Image (cartoon, rainbow, N blue to C red):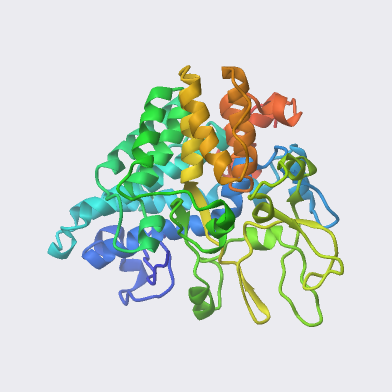
Length: 472
C-alpha cells in the first residue's frame, strides 16, 4: 500500500514518499498537520507503510528457531542463530523491534488526532480509518507479545520532547487484553469488503480483524470464541474460498486471491518510480532465492536460509503444495548459478530484464489458516468429528486422502502437521508450537528460554527501565 506524502510531525510520526508541506519544519506539529480528510488518508496509509519493511521479521519471528530451515554455505551468523535457535541479544538484524514501534507511534497519532478533524469530506470514512488504526495497533502488539512477551505498551503518540522516553514493560496478560480491546474496537468500524480486491485484501476488513482475533483467542484458550469467529469468516460476505489445489502457487504469485484475507502489499511499479525499495520491499525474496547466473544476467537472491530436510520430507507423494513451497535448482543450473540446491518458492517477486523486484505480497492471514485454526478450536472443545471435517478440507485441496487420525490427541497432532506443510514460510510455526506448548517436543530444542526472544542490547542501553528476558 502506498502513501505519497511525507507527514512531518514533531516526532516524525509518519513518513512516505513526497514532501508536500511548505511550512518550516520547526513549526509543524501533530496538531497543525491533522486538518483535512487528505491528512487523515495519508496518515493511515503511513501506518500500513510502516509494516512493509518488516516482512522478514514478521516471518522469522513467527517461524524462526523451529524446524523449517537449514543452513548453507551462504548463511551468515545472524541467520545461523535463527536456524539453530540460539539467538542472542546482539542479533539486531532480526530481534530489533524499532520498525514495529515506529508503526505503533504512527497509529497512535491517527487515533489521537483524526477524531478532531472537522473536514466534512472525512465524515463518511472517519470511523473506518479509526477502525483500521485499531486493527493495525492490535496486530503489531500481537507480534511483539508473542515474540518477546514483556514489552512496553504505548497508547499515546510521541509528539513532545517532554514525554517519557523510558517506558517500562507490560506483562503478556495486560498486552493480550489491550490487543483484544483494539481488535474489538476495530471490528465494528470497517466493512467486509472494499470496492477493489487490492483494498479488500490490503486494508483492514472484518475478515482480517476476525482472523487476528481468532488467533488471539487460541492463545487465550477461548476455544469456543475462536470456533465461532472461524465460522463467521468462512461464511463472510467477502466470499473467501480456497484456491484450487492445482493453482496453489497462485496464492503467492497472483496476489490478493480468493483465499487471501489480509496481505502486505508490494508494488514493483512504485519501486521503479521511486528507484528506492525502502518502503516497498519484501526482503524475503532476497533471503530465500538462490543466486542467479552471471552470463547471461539472471537476477536471483542471496540464498541465506533454505528449506529444512524435515519440511521437504513432510510432503506426502502427490501433495499439490510441494512445488509451490520449495523447489530445487535444475541440473545444469541455468537460470540459477548453482545446480541442485533447495530454495523457498513462495516469494519469487517479479523479474523484468536484469531486475528482480522484491514485490511478492506477504500473506498474513488466509482462509486455509482460518480453517485449520477452527479445526484446532473444535478439537480442543471435544468436537473431534467436526475438527476432522475442517482438516480434511485442507487435505482434499492438497490432493491428499482424508486423515486417518481419529482420537482427539491424534487429531491435534495431525492439525499441527498440516499447518507445518500448509503454512510453511508464512510465519506461523514458532507461534503455533509456543501456543500449544509443543515447541521442545516438535523441534528438539529444549532450552525453555527459547520460547521468547531476547530484547536487543541497543534497547536495553537506550532505556534503563527495560529488563532483559530470562536466559539472555
